[in-house]
Image (cartoon, rainbow over all chains, first blue to last red; front, top):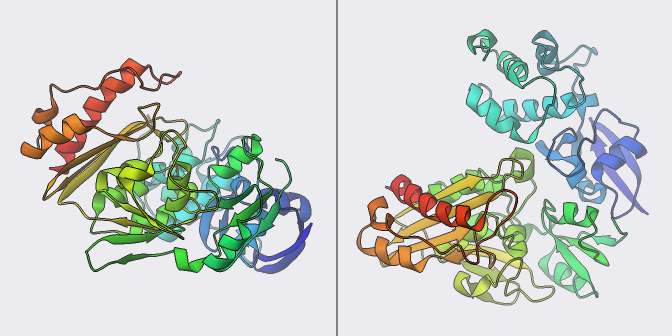
Length: 161
Length: 262
């Protein structure tokens, strides 16, 4: 076991990891941050997406020791300072961008990364960016609406298909 | 995953030394290697992460006008960093998904040489040079078959140098579940000829379609390759497509790539 330290949601975090310990295992089991989900564990589904040094990554396909010294942000760090939902989370609730909710942490983290890069994305850009996040409930339509709304755009303009 | 030691050197020299251990493997972005480790398809004694080796990251230009991309440069960085070579930028921007592109590296992709990966087609069609810690290898001499390359044990790709073609385009028929190319064709037109590289199709991995290159050299139009085809023999056959289907796609993707390259 090796000692590893990083900043998680703005706070110093430290723990022990083997070489093979995945970042998602470290977050969930060592730090108790179980908001980051493991869906497929094969880097297909995106339920485990977190931000490492400001970029979206799949925490099931990165080792904890690779995050030594990094700034990590998880779904637990997304709410506003007063505990209320942030703009992306609130938009998911308002537009029913989730049903079972299993994929939602990864969806929110990917959506937030998209809006960092592209503050007013088109519907096509949203669908393209969320390609690596799989949802088996919603059919994606309301997720796309939520991201449009979170970016301050008219979510109703995309027609239901 | 079997257990292994983990090292994260901060210089190329340290990385080379760390890789001298028996059964040690370099770790680029890990987007293929980590899934392989989970499936126990690889069992290294030690992984040497190249992520901390800053000297093999980044993009620059050399005196010959070539784009020089550090082996540890991510797909996302290439997508945003080579505006003078739009076909290469577009290829990088369409590998996997955004999270994969934030980790996966060009050096890792070329070292792995997956028969369906995109970068091998770009390197071969561009006539790129693969630079390692010990030597320079022309793309024509580098790819040696499915998952096989000219790299020796412990050799690290430090840089890939791309000449910039007059016209180029990469046309990818995407396998939607894996996001790899079912068939991908990269065409590149230079002043002294045309190069056509095909990925995803052959059991031998990426290859140059010399018949199409000859036809396109005198007439760079989709019509010039209309009557050409590759034999189905030696093409990959799996649940996604038969050898005949892939052979057919090679022609279609080539024509589309030429049309899009203009």
